[in-house]
Image 1: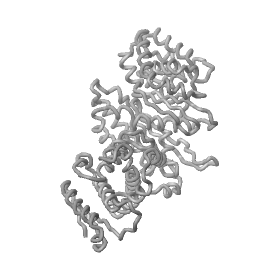
Image 2: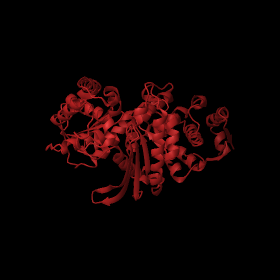
Image 3: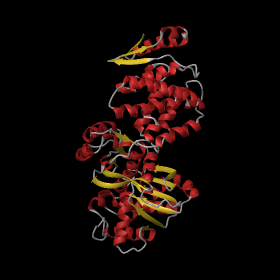
Image 4: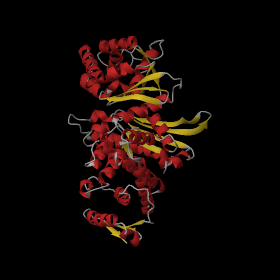
Length: 504
């Protein structure tokens, strides 16, 4: 799907987001309506499962069987509710615990089978961007600069932005589950444990604090469970500041230390499922206030899942963040736009002829092929020698807002394998569609190796089983001996990975 085609798409009736957080799994379904200020999403239904995934993470970063069972059971229940939503309008994302768990990929396969939809493991900065997107859509677009803080089960995201545009994004490895487990074992709360928890959180946050202080903000906003729990307690205790304050948190901390446990009777408004992780979340929030010199923070109901919903809506229209990201890479790395467009168009034409998967799957893969073709030569900014390896590294490792880790990995595989020996990607690619996409990209690169904007003869690509057949005018091929020689080499190279290429 081209960007022009995406921008003309009709608004979906329903969109859905699944957030596989380290503490809770959330499902949010929204109704899309056109309003005078543009498309708006109105929450229609939500489900929350207190999975506490990160609590099952061992010292060697492996998830135990119990936490995996809870995760799969929760997603099985979500699956039933998602049947009413078009598959193309559902996006599921997984966060910190899936990022760090060594057996995360194994669990992911089971989770996807239970949910019935693909799940994207997103990077920390992408999580931060989506959180900001959700929060921004719950606040007035008044031009003020906001600091958004989201304390999750496994990580805490910090974002500074204005209206709908994030300017500074970071993800710090401090979360309410780990801090509750490490500093308040068995639920026991002590003064020394609280002091150690706050100091450790400050130590982690200190790495980013200078840049955030330098940029500054007009308003601080907290989102998600820990911030909501603190704000609800202070409201029920009669705090008239309508949000979170240092004095208010000091009052809660004193009460916790006095009781020695999280006593919900002394903390009105605290829900039972927050009790096991509340102390860790409070310690982190106190550290945030101290390290960033915050006095007051308001709470927003916007969170990752709402941000994902708006991102789903954007992917069907002109404001798909991924287009902007690729455009920024083109500018930053001085990509030859004309060459990128030639290769992208021909590769997309080949892909259309191969016709694998559903209409939506073909459209999404075509888009990834076009983006990969656009990013083939970003490695030239490092060195011409082995530029494709440099390009693949950049694509796989760079922060690319809008892209999941799976998207980046797939594009990096295509970029790495678009020239040279196929052996280097033989262990990286197993999917038939991805091999076919790579074939399309390699052939396009061969036909436009001369980097000239010349008219090619009609070239057809047909796939039957494990055999690709390229049909081309023989007289044209004879007049282009280098292309002919390259195609002969391709036949030998593909045979090494068990795929036949015929040129007729």
